[in-house]
Image 1 (cartoon, rainbow, N blue to C red):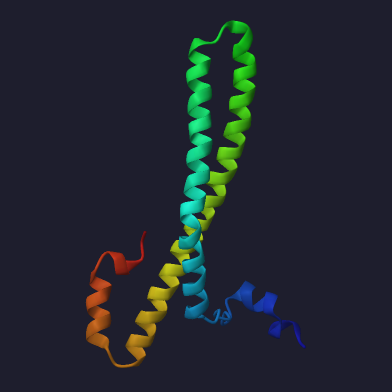
Image 2: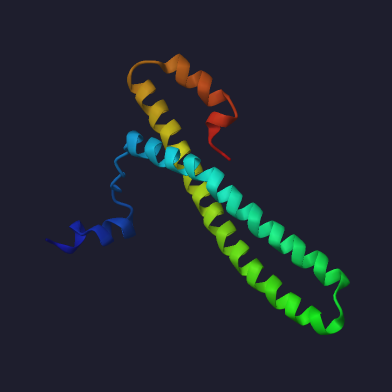
Length: 132
């Protein structure tokens, strides 16, 4: 295959990019899985925050000698919280991207089906502009 037909060259010079095939059912299933995991993750985060809250209130009344131990325990709790929040935030961001892809795929299919009025109406609404 000549170099000008290779994928890296086409990306470099702006050849037609291969568009990822949208699979709405997979996106919907992934969104459902994310939403089903929310109560469990929320409970875990709340438990960690309560533990941190207790450590913080103990720190306020602890003697100097115990404050270092308390701060080490807080650091451990914060490590866990930060990691869980990062995972949660990433999952939520991916869910948002999936939702935007679903909406975009819907609008594209509606346009192809001749529902131009519906597409025009939806694109006027802020949520359908997909800038969130």
